Image 1 (tube, helix red, strand yellow):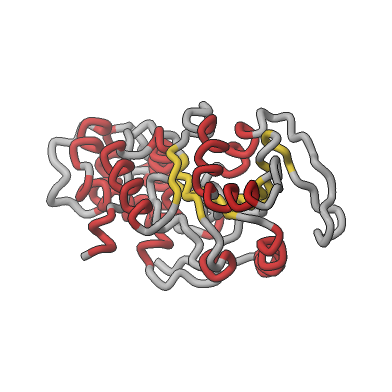
Image 2 (tube, rainbow, N blue to C red):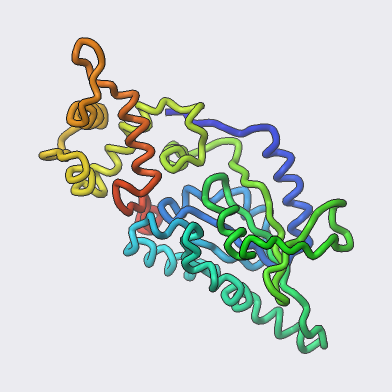
Length: 286
């Protein structure tokens, strides 16, 4: 399944981010806890450079908690600050300011040594589409969006948002990247809705998702869809069987797999199938 989706505005967004990153002390990168590697834009590394980074594992409420703990430990070993959140409920978000200051504690100490007491940390928040970045920012600023005002050297009209006296945020639009070198990454992004459904073959996508869940979480789909066994079945066989059990038939008794594909993806994305993480640290360490 060839997945390519890169609207022209994303090129402009990248150029803007390359200018904006010069104005901040650190970068907070929001990723989807269900796909912590696939939901990271590899371009961000070159944009951010050596600036300190905080990885925010959002949507943790929909992810496998055991694997989330493994990912938190993995990112710490890479030298990143980490934070686990569920932006919709606000869980974990209250720790954002504390963790941000911990990531920059050496810089803050240096500021104090120079007499720059009370100088606010400036952080840029980045993330690909559909990782919950906007919801996260709204929760952090408690939906007040108190604007600090333009800063010297900032592109005209750019506004900073004040979290508290010690922290200011700069939001950025979500951007994908021009080409998914690894088909698995493209699939993971499509499963979670980061790639628009309009450009996808949803039946093929659903079959691929069923095969992944069959391998990683067989009991979950068997219990949800009342399957006797899933281990030996292909994705299209599972999709047809589920559609038939749900009574989704069209004229002639054929299964309505197109409709079932939409429902399956909705149930996965809304957490109705269970809590899943589609990749583990061991997958990239092997």
